[in-house]
Amino acid sequence: MRWSVSLFLLLLLACSRALGQVGNDNLTGPAGIFNGDVTSAGDYDPYTGNVRRSIIDIAVAGTVGTQPLALVRTANSRGSGQWKYGFGTAGNWRHNYMWSLSTDENTVSGFSPSSYSVNFPDGRSVSFAYSSSDAYYRGPTGVTERFVPLSGGVAYLVLSDNTRIQFQATQYTDPQQVCDQYDHCHTVTYYGYNWLAQAIIDPYGLRTTLTYTTIGSDQVLYQVTEPAGRWLRFSYVTTPWNNYTGQPDVLLQTVTASDGRSVLYRYGGMPFSPGTYEYSFLSKVDSTATAISRLLTPTRHPMSRPTATTTGLRCSKPALTPCTVARCGESPTFTLPPITLTELLLLSVRSRVKITIPVQAPGEHFPLSR
Image 1 (cartoon, one colour):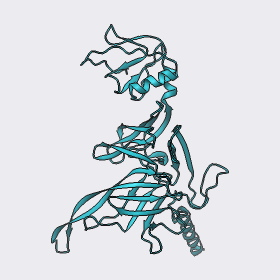
Image 2 (cartoon, one colour; image 1 turned 45 degrees about the vertical axis):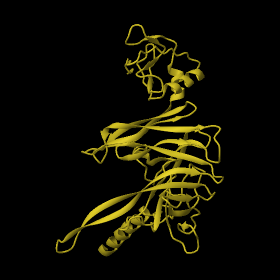
Image 3 (cartoon, one colour; image 1 turned 120 degrees about the vertical axis):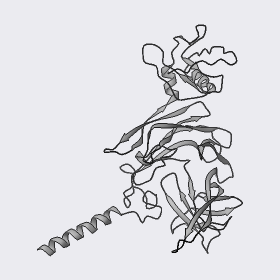
Image 4 (tube, helix red, strand yellow; image 1 turned 90 degrees about the vertical axis):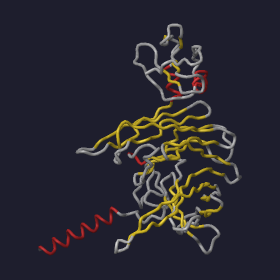
């Protein structure tokens, strides 16, 4: 009896481990689309158990080429989100411009990587390597995407419809101390590449470009521009709480479109006791275009100087600098995320609200509303 109980427990443990690992051998990762999703009740993969949800937060009409100019968020229950400069750790959210590429290091400067690992915005993760039967590097059997290896500082992921994702390589050095069993040490310099997605090139050669700004030592997505010049612009916010690394999160705060509309992302921090760090989560998504048309009223509010008046706008600097909008009347003051004065004026036209901006002498600065 004792042996039978022990055998039963052993089998139960083995089965529980097996169930926990189901889908880990999926060719595009546990969150990757490969087997065909079931969409009759949401969107999930019956093999990996991954549940997927995609939301279009903002889209710009009239774009040129086959690639839409839109911000699409995708959450995968078995995926790994991009918490840094993304939407926080909770929910595993990524957006459709979060392309990333990684390669191994080598002791030879200017080397050609033997394989390329691509993380797709939709949750897939695919490694591409040399194939003797193809001029392109190939992924596992059944993966239709291909890869053009590094040449002239760039490499390309080729999608199934011949759209190409262009990655720019920047070489870095990584000196490391290597010691033998007798503690005889010397320095070995390793070389590697940092990769940035620079463009999405449609099958007809039309380029949607991705440009970056610097936050700390990181290159962070700043603007996505379609072939005719329309764009989406990104800004970020630093959380007042620390993540598991002991540092604050820097998260995506607003996405502003060239037509004047924008989206605001709000976050919260959740600690798990005892003594853990706070984890950032996306708590709310607001359309600032809707908020502005709702919040602006024709009521006049005095500025800090008695001669200056406005209809709900308080600006800290001249035009084309960030401004804030405050609610007038009996309700508490409400501050929207930073937008340019030009974008605010466009939105005021749409909402049929007149905005009066006080004349500002050179060197004068009105206070931001809070």
